[in-house]
Image 1 (cartoon, rainbow, N blue to C red):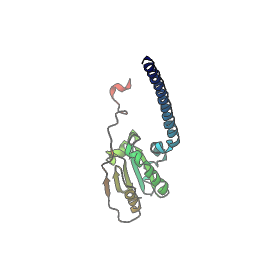
Image 2: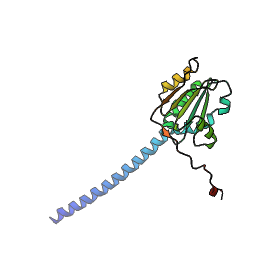
Image 3: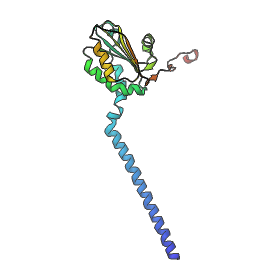
Length: 190
């Protein structure tokens, strides 16, 4: 009986070692697969964030946009806004398709430089897209996540003579909170 018991203990210990070894191998393989997946799909996974960061660089200055006799597509966005990230590929595709005929202006709501435009166009949810005709008249305002077809229809209506203002709000949007990073108070000057 003692031999059988010893044999079971030795067998149990060897199974435990094999199990630990297998778990280590599985863990290493999982980490490796995740790492390789991130490398292979990094452009797909981070494309929206990259597009948002590049919007500011691709933007036409708003002062020029309102004086160059071209219609204007103006988007208010933030890099932290998940809905903005989701919309970024669509907006980028619009820019690629229409940039010869339309000004594309991208204003990051976190940049104090654009506060006067944020107030002027009553931006309180992002993304907010305002579409203007070539005289600078506001034609459409889209707030929140929008269907590509609705935006395209509004862009195409700029060419028509019938230009009634339209506001389309989708409940999927990010609320803008007061940016306290740039606030100046008497104690912030050392």
